[in-house]
Length: 118
Length: 112
Image (cartoon, rainbow over all chains, first blue to last red; front, side, top):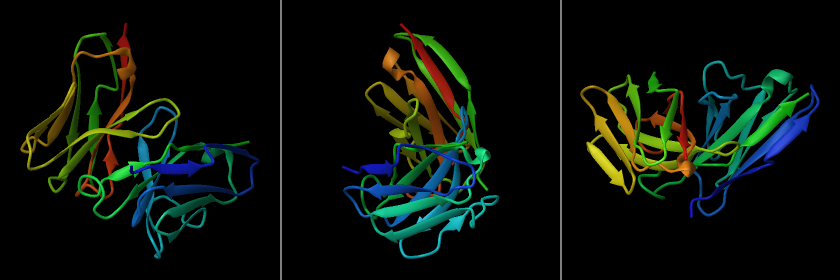
């Protein structure tokens, strides 16, 4: 149990286009989802926290108008990178937390999405 | 906010030897400390975690120790195997489901 999927697993796009990444909790309801970004050989940096049905909370330095997050249901959150540029190329990882699932509602991570902007 | 430091950044051991990775944290309010294993091109996988009311936890070849006074925790892997080769991250948070602050990661290489 406690499986989180991401789609797509990788995407290549042209500079200036927008890309949508989906994060789904497959076997539990995720009251909260987190979005992380990971550059090569670096650690995971939290971008934003989203609670179902409310606006996402962005970390300092993350542009909310560029990284649009929607958490419209208890099993789906989406991250849209708008007007992507080469510097947005990164590995984007989501995690999901369900109430009362696992050991104290721990976070379960998705497999990540590799975004390359040409 | 919380700051987590992790050492070493790379660690190379012979198969069968033990590996130890250490982390320190800054916020005494943190009470949940998970360890993740990340293989190339994949998301992090939780391998073990510890809460602040426990000093040590073991799961087969993996153990984690926590020193709340010194604000540091360590991952111990015994009898290492080549499949243990990966990047390991420690993290800290105020509660299991809350925002995680990650350490910088340790690339572990187990040589056969």
